[in-house]
Image (cartoon, rainbow over all chains, first blue to last red):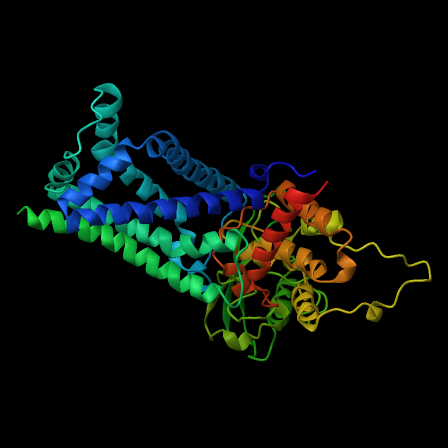
Length: 222
Length: 249
């Protein structure tokens, strides 16, 4: 009888991939909702209010998301520590760029940068939302979301941090998207080239879209 | 061709070791890298210095014995070759060449450039075999129909010579390309079906016990593999492992 997936190297790799798929799916729906703020303030408020008050989203999907983020971060750090321990003596001369790209070798750096940004993001948007609803008991404020978003995107320092963070996210996804498929066992001559192209598109379009939304609101308020 | 060599010297497993600098002269472009090391060792013996210990056997790229991390790359700067097939024409006159052993906690240095690769042997022993009755009434292998595509794929991965370049070049010292090759070569063949599930579970378990790192899909291993084994077989091993984890007794 085999042990649990999390106790083997292959199992951990698959779990990293599954949590990665989940986070990439979440990121896409987050982008779509954010993009509504460019189209119409009312539409953005309406969708945000639904997401902020729907029981399934709040009490099932949100905790699952939090666990997914923490798992991906925790497992990533754990694997990196183990991987570094697997080579206690380094090479005096090493040329990793001859056989692999920078993104694939530095997932831990780009990942931690994204997580640091998430700290600021939680402070800006998630914690105030939790305070409003669970401490102050204000559940019915359907028009607060757009002004809150605009207020945060008035600050140039925030915009700069936001843009830099999404560059790191893009670098993370340029390897992460296709890597998740490989880890989960999807590698096929027919489909893998398309998956790699889709991954590159996703890794550029989604972060660039988030940056566009931030810049749109910043310049609209000048 | 005159060269400056920075060679790793280490007396034994416990010794800390370090790089020593040697000059070699009169090297010709058609020499193999190992022949160049032979010349270096002859010079060292003439000078009364202990020659450098390094692994070698067939010297024609099929045994997997030679290793060496040369100028920052497993088996040196050429592609699809082992160190014994690496020609000195790949280097320039006056060049400084760094020569180091494989670096991995699971493959410790025994002496100078020789590492202990018995971790690969233990992985192989844990499941890299098929149990066939050899008492005299063994079935002719050709009696079993095998799709050409599967036979080709099995042959591709069976070309793994277990040299350890995948481990040496992986930033995580992962052995997944080696284990994937050994798991896949039997998974494609009818003779490998009986022990299919237990094989992948046992080999991955032994790989983890040996202290190899985890694969992060950088793809460096398939670039440096002298037999060009693709990381698509790592994906296959992952599928085999997942399937066996769910269905094995």
